[in-house]
Image (tube, rainbow, N blue to C red):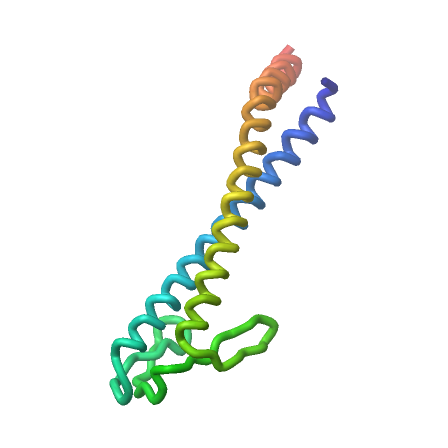
Amino acid sequence: MAAEKLLGEYDYYRAQAEALRQNLELINNSLVSLEVVSEGLTEIKTLGKENEILVPIGGTAFVKARILDTEEVIISLGADVAARKPIPVAREDIDRRMKELEKVRAEQGERLSLVLKRLDELTPHVQRLMAQSQAQGRG
């Protein structure tokens, strides 16, 4: 394998691995966020009306609020669109999103495994090439 081609392929797979790792991190963060939403929906249903809660407004800031409706929530549908839905329907939506994300996470994990396998195969060749290059530089 030509040196330039080998190094190019190695760099390509390294970049792919990094991108896949970042995607997996975003997916995991989204799953954690959806789990918090799911738990929040359960809590609202059990708290009842007029109970005081803390509502996050960004970062580590919260405001006190009272629950006015324990039957429906406003849920984001994406692209700055939201809809009022009964809590059980909202939970189904959240569960569906989580299942979709878990499927994507599994697919991304498989792709990452394949990329890392190819990197493992290329690494000895790249190391040998680098050692030869250093030896020629000294010689």
